[in-house]
Length: 340
Image 1 (cartoon, rainbow, N blue to C red):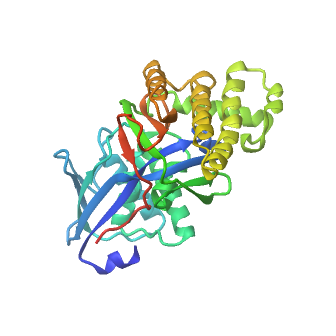
Image 2: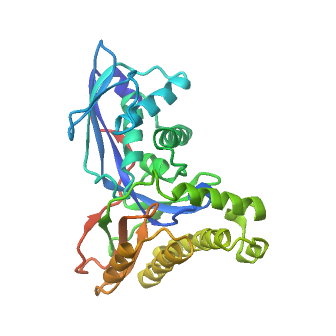
């Protein structure tokens, strides 16, 4: 990424992601298994002598870096990222930039994290070493908080930066240790977009707060077990904590099943994850539940689940390559990078 500053123009790309398993665990320091996908955000830029400006090829909005941020469009991400870079004494180049994306907005494929990372890289941020990747992921996570008010974990920004071709990444969100988990060639990952959603204004923040309440009572959910739940009196907080504790276990079990190419078992674990998100964490919807049931009924589909923050978005299915399931077949991609 450093070489981009020697150029007068260039292009950066940042992928979206699909989370195979491990939802609502990252903000409690738990385990997740996302993979970067071959859809993403591209920013084409050129150096200029005027203040930096960003435009998008999907609307007529132009965002100047130091104008007042607007809360109604993508420009708020530009301002949030730029301000945080400036606070870290990062001197950004003056650029004219155009944003384009192949990610459907509101689909649950992390279009916002993809945009944040692409903005940061176009403004000269570095993401070559592991420490730089982690630092930039943390900055972009803070930008998400500032731009939307959604108290998300670090999973999305980290996988967007650190994704690996042909692999998902097992991320321990306590230590930020990342372990590649190969996606075998004899299965396919299929994403179905079910319903638009936004986490801003949803009950996502409530789930974060209730999980924090659980941790005040029994300690970190990452290291808790189900017997610890006896100390929680509030039945809602207990159910939320139950999901997180058992979801961490499912992530580990799913990784083992995929490593052993036991796709039938991996599919059952995905279904268990969806059922817990539906019944214990209450972030699924009737429409999402019906889509999961429909996908599971297709011959050759090992399992399916909602993916992402919930309240709409996508489901993800693990399937035999010959399974007749509609949707977008996604390939595991490398993380964000300079294109030219």
